[in-house]
Structure formats: structure tokens, C-alpha cells
Amino acid sequence: MSRNATLRNPRLQVAAFLGLAVVLSFVTIVAAMRLAERGAEAELRRNAEFTLGLQVETILSHLDKYRHVPALTARRQDVLAMLADGLSAVDADELHVIASNVRTLSGATDSAFAAPDGMSMTSATGYLTPELIADTELVRAALQGRLGRASLSAEATQHTYAFSTGVRLGRDVRAIIIVAAPLDSIEQTWALSPNPIIAFDGRGQLVAGNRMARGRATEIREAVFAGAGASGDPIALPDTGNARFIPFRRYIPLMDWTLFVLVSDRAIADAGRYAATVTGLGAALATLIGVIIVLSLQESRRRHRLERLTALRLERQVRQRTGELSRSNAQLAVEVEERKLTETALRKAQAELVQSTKLAAIGQMSAALAHEYNQPLAAIRSYADNAQLFLEREKTAQVSDNLSRIGAMVDRMATLSKTLKSFARKPRIDLADVQLEQVLQDSLLLIEHKARAAGMRITCEPDRPGRLVRAGPVRLAQVFVNLISNAIDSNTLTGADEIVIAWQADEVTTTIRVSDRGPGIHPDDVHSIFDPFFTTKEVGEGLGLGLSIAYNIVQDFGGKLSARGREGGGATFTVVLKTAAETRQVEPA
Ligand code: ADP
Image 1 (cartoon, rainbow, N blue to C red):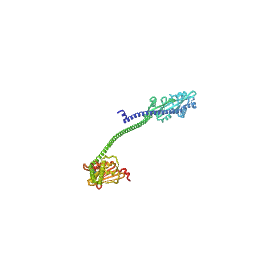
Image 2: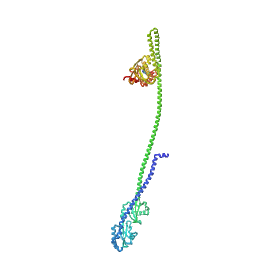
Image 3: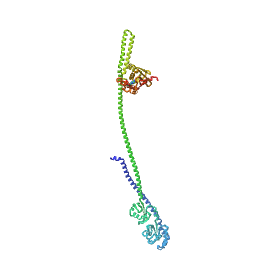
């Protein structure tokens, strides 16, 4: 597969997109996780710093109450009076009463009067002892005239913070007053915190801590001073499950304390996990949307390609069809041309056929025509001879009669010859307004000899004379000659002698009927008699072309030729022609 084909493979495209999406999602998730963790850590740090600041303030304000108690006690007149002769001269009970009084009034854990060397002491509750304060600043500072401060812890649980002041009479320090302030209330305020809060003094001794911290004080101390916690890294604590705690510290210089707040890093991990989950879901959603987009893009590309293919196929089909059409068009044009040529040839052949049938008819008639001409010629001969005799006998009246008979016969012969000539002539193709009566007379003249020889009676019944029709006179005469000739033949078969030619006309058409009393037409032959070469006549007697030609001639005139049986026997041939416009105008409506 080429590189391009590989790129176009839809499955590979989706796979590539998914691969890219997975890589991008992974990078985004990791980045989001880190960012969230960093944010959460910063938030934790802020909270822890805030807590530390707040707790330092709490501690300082809490201890502030006790800070002035030793100084105020040292200035009390009764105390000064009592100590005028030094601590050793004072009755221990009396001292105890005052110490108790101070402790009760201030709410301190204990208050005590110590000798300036710190070796003997009278305390209200017995908590303060020379041993407890031995390593502290309390005595030294009091002797130097400063406020002494020290963190004290008698047992693991009894933590206090003590203040001390010297009771001076003049330049001498007669005694030292120590007040030990309780840290319980501070611890109580810390008890609500879910995080371990703990304070160590300068020697690393636990001075205060909430419940969470106290039980694990040793581990915390080790971790925050020497272990991983020293550099701020998370530390593990016993009995806290998998949680790890980040130590935040604040040093309180005034008291030489270090206050620690240990915050579980679970929030950081949770924030990371939450961010990873949210980002992961987002990435999955984005990938899903991406896949849907890729798939729909592929689908639309596929559809587009399919549409283009279909369009191309259609175009090709249209081109093919157009090609086929133009080929068949060309073929049709050729065929039309061929048909035209054939029609022309047919018309020519038809015209020639008409001509030859006419000539054949004339040929058939020639014997009769010879007789037709010979008879008048013989008559003329005898009239001329007789006229000669009458002339010699000077019978001029008979001569004149004979001469006029001769003239009439010559006229008849001339008419016959003229009609024959025009019948034999090739007809004109165009139509004219033709005198129907005249054409019928010409036809009858041509057929007269045949009719006479067969002993036929031909009756002509025009509706009115002077009728004009649209036709060619010679061709129309040919039609009538043919119809009358056939009628004679038919009558001969039955021995009948009646032929009737009748016509009627209206504005539009003129109908001419030629009827005989022959055998009629068999119903099966009504249409086939107009087919070329259909004949029932003996070989040599008929060609079967007469009616076919007559049919075509009438059709050329825009008319119709039909045949039917006649009531009472015989046949009627009907020629329908167009009435000439001139007649229509002349005739009254
Ligand atoms: P042909 O006269 O040479 O046979 P036509 O085309 O003139 O050719 O006539 C075809 C046929 O039609 C005739 O052979 C005849 O059978 C029939 N026919 C024509 N005229 C008549 C008629 N008047 N009565 C009966 N049959 C006729």
C-alpha cells in the first residue's frame, strides 16, 4: 500500500487519530494532575501558614495574661513587707498562702517563691520544684532584673510555660516569684484540628500538642528535626494508614519554641486524582467527539465520492445515450432520406405505371378505335361517292346534305383523336378546378366503343350542371374510364346492361357513384380489390392494376375511392372529391 493509500484508509485514519488522542490525553492528564497537585500544595501551604500564624498569636495572647503576674506580685506591699528580712525569715505557710492566692487569682498551674539561688522553693501546688527549673533561665533572668521565661514539663503530660521576676528590696533580690502558665487551653483549641499540631522548645522537648500529635510526639520529633521532615518532605506517622504528612513549621523566637502543623498530603493526591479524573473524562469526551467528527467527515467524504461517482456514471450514461440518440438520429435522417428517394422513385414508377396502363388501355382499344375510324371513313367515302353522283345529276340539295354529314363525321373523328391524344399525354401533377361533366363526357367518349360493343346502357345523372371539383382532368378521366370499363366487364358476367353514374355535391365534397348490376364484390375482397395486381380476371384479360392506380390518383386529389355491394345486386364504386372553391362561391348556399 502506498503512503497516500495508507493515509486514505478510514480505519487507519481512526486508529491514527485515536493514537494521537491517547498520547495527547496522557500528556494533558499528567500536566493537569501536576498543576492540580501544585495548586493543592500551595493551598495547603497557605492554610498551614495561616494556621501557624493564628496559633502563634493564640499562644502569645494566652501567655500574655501570665506575663505580668510575677512582676505585679513582686510589687505587692504585703509581699515586700513579708520579704523585708529575706525568704528564710518568712513563715512557709504564709508564703504558701500568698503563692496559692496568686495562682488562684491568675489561673496559673502553679506559682512559687524561690530563694535567689533557686535551691529552695515554696509553691502553691508543688508542681514547681527546684529541679524543674534548674536548667532554665528563670533564676538567672530574675536575678538580672529581666523577665524570666522557660518551658517546663514535669511529666510527659504536664507542660507549662513559666515567667519569673525577682522581688527586689533596694538592690537586693530577696526572692524569685515564678508563675507557671498552663498550656492545656491552647491544646484544647488545637484539639479540633484534624491535623497534628505540636510545639517543641529549644531543647527539642515537647511543650504542647493536640491529641493527634502527642501520641506520636517521638516520631514527629525525629522526623522534623533529623528525618525527611527536616527539609519539608512528607513523613509517615504510626497509625495513620497510608497518609503522609507535610510538616509546616514556625519558630517563635521570644519563647524559643518551634510550632509544627502537619498536614496530610492526601488532599494533594486527591486533587491530583480528581484533576486526572476530570481531565481524563474530558479527554475521553473530546476523543469521542473527535472520533465522531472524524467518522462523520469520512462519511461525508464517502458520500461526496459516491455522489461524484454516480454523477460521473450518469454523465457517462447520458453521453452514451446522447451518442446513441445522435447515431439513431443520423440513421433516421439517412432512412428519411432513403424513404424520400424511395417515395420519389415510387411516384416516378407509379407515374410511369399509370402511363403504361393508359397506353396499354389504348393498345387494347386500338382494334375498336380502328373500327371507329374506318367506319366513318367508309361512310365518308360512300357519302363522297354519292355526292359525286348527285352532283352529276345536279341534285345539289342531296350534295349539300351529304357534305354536311361528311363534315359531322370528320368533326367526331377529330374530337375522338383529340381526346385520345390528351389521354395518352403524361398528366400534370398539380391540381386545378375541373369541370366534372366535361371529364365524364371525355371518359364516356373513350369507353363508348366498348360499351356499345357490349350493348350497355350508361345513364348519367348529374345533380346540376357546371360542377367544379379539385382534380387533374386527365387523371380523373383515367379513373372514370377504369371504373366504367370494370362495370361493363361485371355486367357482361351477369348479362346485365345497366350502368348508372350519379353525383351529389355540397360545399365541401362532391361524390360520384358508378354502379352496375354485375356479380358485386365479395365482402372479403372489399379492401383487397384496391391492392396492386389483385384480379379475378383471366390471364391476359386483366392486370389487376386499374383500381390500385385509380385509388392512388383519387388520394392524390385529396379525395377517397371506395367500393361496396349494391342493393339488388351489383357493385357501386364511390369517388369523393373536394368541391372547388370557385363553385362554392358561385353556388347559392
Ligand atoms: P383488372 O380489371 O385488370 O382485373 P382492376 O384493378 O381494374 O384490374 O380490378 C381488379 C378486380 O376488381 C377485378 O379483377 C374484379 O375482380 C374486381 N372488380 C373491379 N370492378 C368491379 C365491379 N364493378 N364489380 C365487381 N368486381 C369488380
